[in-house]
Image (cartoon, rainbow, N blue to C red; front, side):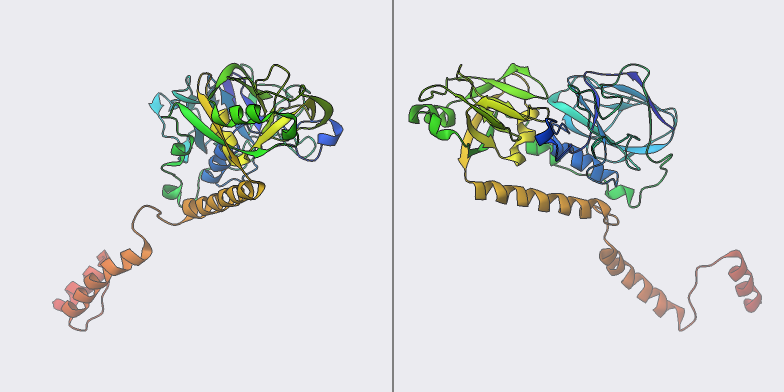
Length: 367
């Protein structure tokens, strides 16, 4: 039991948080471009944060469900509908057997995510991960993007209940991306080859606006803007490429390396984007302005720690009974005067909720 892709969308793949530990063997981590959105989607349907999700970009898929489950949609606003009815994002929602989930082109953002309760789609792990590596053709669904007619089974055959479902909704999370702003600021830790750039080049990088170009994919985002000047070229002996590394080739314009990046590269790196800011970058469409702010390693680590604590707080929030409604303590305070009044009115008699049987005994006593 699972779901069928009536329309595949643009580059709809199965991803988790990435394939770690194999860079030395030449395998990129892959994984979700926007890990923040994927983690939150899984939290909303009570999955492990690393459970596989569907990632899509530019145009979402149309999916028909053959079993009941719960879903959550996060990331960009792809205007999802279920059987023609608009769906809210960042909310766990039930889906019936036979229902059709559709996505459109995004109103905001670039990447969207769909989490499925019960552990997500049933995907065989390759080197410990369900992520699709499109270049190597491994992981995910047959190592490729979805096509029309593909059928995905669910890890759990049917999910018909999520405890405290009313709590599984989050407000304000989409504000993190600042979609209403034409500019996004990214915090950058100085790179290992920063000394290969002139002082004028470094100042240009941190003080000038850059724009996301149309040459963007899961491997990296190219930026258009002022040339970052080097002392004597940017060629180096190839070394490792971290997520968010900002390479500057000889043409002088930055390239930010992302999920499907190569494992090593031969261009100087002026810095590395703080991991907490990468979702803002990948959700930026071509033409959006990007600016860079320098931070220390310690500051970047503190940002990561705060994000981790934020995810833990969200997990508690969505699992609390009646979150956003009346808490048990407030309910008790409201019931106390009502029960006290009933006790006084009873004159010491036992209190009960009247049923047909108790009504019959009461009438018999009265007669």
